[in-house]
Length: 250
Length: 354
Ligand SMILES: Cc1ncc(C[n+]2csc(CCOP(=O)(O)OP(=O)(O)O)c2C)c(N)n1
Ligand code: SF4
Image (cartoon, rainbow over all chains, first blue to last red; front, side):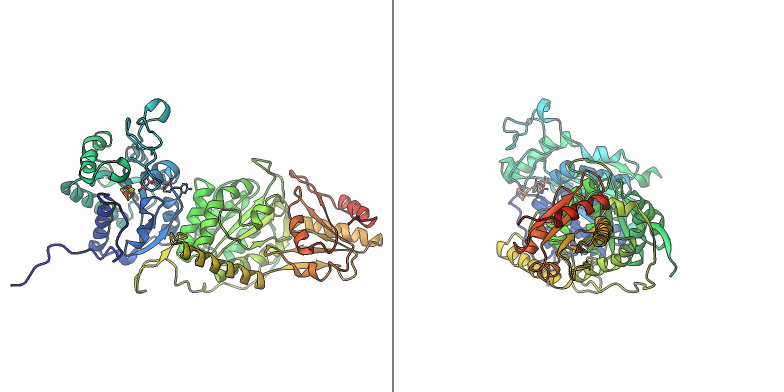
């Protein structure tokens, strides 16, 4: 009897073991992006841009050419690459501190220009790498080390819905928010990410997939509770939805 | 090729295009706007890309991305914008990416004004951003020199995999002079097997990064960078000497001020004062040689600058206590006249206190 493989490691990832904490969904998101690039057979034509955050070492994990960028600047770096190599697939992988705080300008303008790149925007409602500070995406009441009593709106502002905001820009071609908290949602995430890369391949413009993700280490709860926390607390504030689909508009 | 009458900013742009630069990412700021305007029209004509970025920060990071593909790429700005580019320049240096940056400098600090100044010297010659790095700095004094230097700037950038700065004050950016471009055409750029262009046919993923979390690894990387900077210092120093053979006093000036100093020296020579000029063309690496060979013979040096006194520190380092060093400068956008420099030469030769 021959054995049939039911699960294979994707060629889109290198052999290197990731450094993510147990229960962190960064690794799942990596795998999904890598599988999509492999399935589309574009790994050899792809240049990825790593950002600054827990995913900074992502350039060692994706099995394609990679550039590491300064904090928040990945969309500008990707723009530079794409303008020289318009027929390659160019993507950035950015956290919510990286994209929504220090890099919001670069993200908005890349979208406004209709830059033909794909952003994988990982929203875990916190700064992971620096030890759990409040992010623009931190929920009201959420405790972080810089909002120790829980974020309150009067002095600390309100959570930022980046996908909704970017979707208002005419240059944005496809914007969707997905989640990584269970298997059906991971399947949906994969569909969304594939869609974004396909749109880029067709040259239709700016695409961004926001993925709700976990940070058990800085949320101070375990892996299972974290998945639950995404479902119970994040999704109500960050609804899962296609916010822009230029193909449908046509 | 025939002589053309052009504005400084346009000469920089055209010379860059002739050097094979096809990508430009910029942001408006006076007094370098003509450079951006010229590129916006010119680059599409030669199949290149001009992009107006949303900020200098974005522009330099676009340069970083484009440089990573191996393309010849440039950005330009003026002082406040140059400050914003420092983060990206540090990353370019750390990741060893070639690119050319122009600073058509103006009065500072802060918003300062839009008149010419040389007060970004410290920032230019000490790296400017964070970390242990330098970048080659070319300081042309005429538009013909600009036309001749741009190709070398791109070559030095490629050869050493480093960002290179063209530091020209607003006088050079705004003035018009006849220039002749060389007929040399850049046919093929040097091969860049490190460039991230996709892995098709080249074996495996390439990585561009300035990060090394392993302390031994980063120290080794920085030592390699240090060796590179020493190599650049060995090979790329440029300067001009003017009337220094019999000089008792030597002025030191760069860029447009060097030309005004030359006029002052002519006046002084007529008056019988033996004075000459050292004009650094590279501000980093700084020329030591012309000082070493003159410092035990002359009675003194005077650094003349459009700043409150910046390059004078490098003059002191090069003279190393062998002779008195003084300073004369105007700043805030004021351009010194050759008459006032002449007066200073007269005072200097009247008796320099050690
Ligand atoms: C200019 C600059 N400022 C600050 C930092 C420090 N820093 C590193 S990672 C990070 C936050 C990253 O958070 P996020 O983007 O949410 O990613 P996560 O770690 O949660 O995946 C910060 C502020 C830096 N490296 N550079
Ligand atoms: S700190 Fe948070 S985001 Fe970073 S790897 Fe750990 S769980 Fe993931």
